Image (cartoon, rainbow, N blue to C red; front, side, top):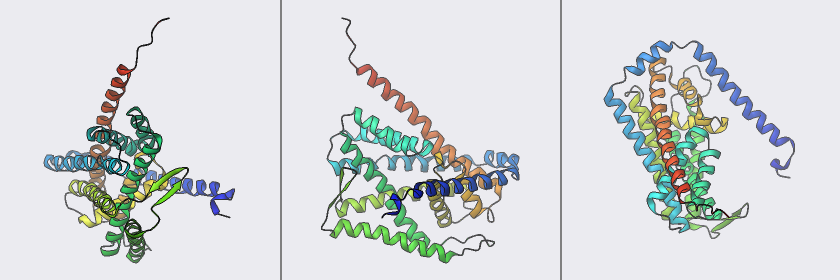
Length: 317
């Protein structure tokens, strides 16, 4: 019997998730009590304008690139929605996904907006699946390379050394390469998942998926690196960001609120003053999460208003 079919498995999974979430919250509260928030505010206000502009430009590039992920799904499914329409849906869903979680942003917004544009449920499912796959395939490849070639120097009081990260990196790299091999040489090209047929993309499309996703993760890390003003090597910032991404997924916290900061503080506070580190992360959250969310909310409101105007006016009997 598969472990997921056992009645105690869902409860154990929920208990472990809740325990991890409670641990993160406890650490955050304990840490927050010892932070001099006055120094954090001063460090945030002291960030040079050119640093903020550079970070904002990188955040905009990342959102623009991610907005192209569904274009891969457009080519994959062969639907004929216009490129600007696809990018708009992708941008809005990603912004809400970052701040409210994947079920709200990544799934609900895509289904609502694509359905109104005339796409069938099966097509939307394939576009959504490929977009999510693209994001995490790039993560696997990039994290595998970074953890294997340039493992993060962990804090000196940690019992875990960098060899553990290297081993993890090898596993992640193997998974990404397995996907490429399947796309290139697998004789079986389709699988059925919950009644939906999933087709393996061609090798060229798989390479495009990996390239786009890797570039996006690297740009995101570049924005944090700029806000830290070079106090930490770029490879280390990238490693910590990749670790924080997984921690955010495990805890299911919308926007990874507090999780991102907790991971960065845990791994880099021995190298960067706490106030400067938190100031950089607050700046990143404002530029990468809050700013795009406001823009996406305005765009979505305009889409809803246009859709309502196009509805037929009911006639009186």
